[in-house]
Length: 240
Image (cartoon, rainbow, N blue to C red; front, side, top):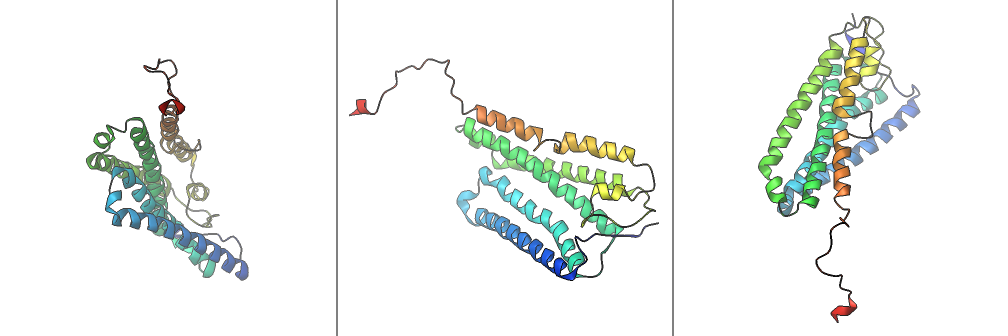
């Protein structure tokens, strides 16, 4: 039985490994600094303590957590000789990747509804999106993402791994782990595909809910030409 997994590097040449580690480090630091700046500004500035900036702040925090799940492991396998990761560590990484990615998608969907409410109904927006409503939307998003991530983690790691322990990826992902199982994984693949299409909308550029909401958002800008204007248009020259 497999007790640990071996992750894969892009190259075994030391110079290339250092170069790749530096590139990953620069992208990692740039992402952390950008998101940390957004979180800091929206927290310190009391004027930004509004529902309009509540979800972007949480989304930036999720981005920092999401990238911190996989990139530090990449540094280790690039710069050190050891490429091994325990099954528990691989399962934890797998769980948090699904947790943060699905939560981000749900937050993007909520942000789309938030923007639509702010533009289409600006007068009623403070009543539609108040802090209590934001909390009610945040908690179910996190809880449902935890259930979703736990379901997929259990769906993968209950399988017996008795073949090779070499994961052909620099982090633990579902397709690479399914190839290492010595049992029939067709049901697991079907469940992953269905849940991915239905819940995360990965078969489309984004979630169907996000696309539909932004469609409503764009359509709200189109004026209704069928309605007659109560007053004729007044030119600027007529005001003088």
